[in-house]
Image (tube, rainbow, N blue to C red; front, side):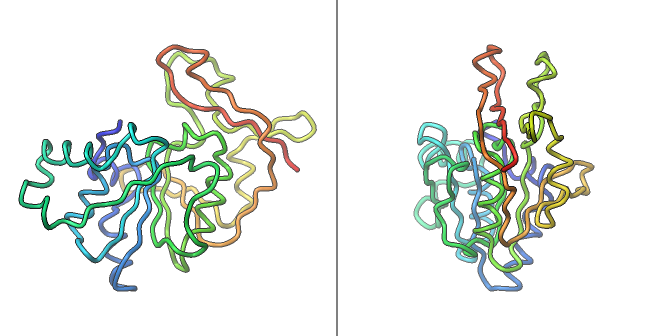
Length: 232
């Protein structure tokens, strides 16, 4: 999963190249953030394509999950870049932290936020979505996958929903709950897949994170974090 590239991202998120081109046409330069870039192959493909017209930053939880050295190693192996690029290419930047806690960017400072196959690991998924709305610039765009359900086979039904929301002890389906928030949308892509699109602005789900359950602690070799909320 950490070696996923731009071709896969385009299927899951929509055509990122087209999105970046539109931002550059409108603003002259695009500031881009990838949450959970893994080894950073999508970032370096975009950097190779757009050069100084973009600034791109990726956030992993820890350096061992992906860093500049690993990115270069796999980019050379995949022939995304060659050795001559090492001296000339403006490489993407890696930062580290929990994206579900807070994104380290000013309000309205990022033109494109994207994340593929990463949010399912976040403890506070709903706060991450709120933070995406906050950091997006005016007319900014986001595309996100992997928040609501686990795709793992062999997991009991009670653990397949990765976002659980309760009011007075009664569960409300997360996808039904988010429908009333105008900044949060599910979009249909040309690939036939769906992605979350969060629009810029103030997004407040009015939720309190009560508990998290690490699926890996229950099922060996299964992954995901179930986030359990109550409505304030």
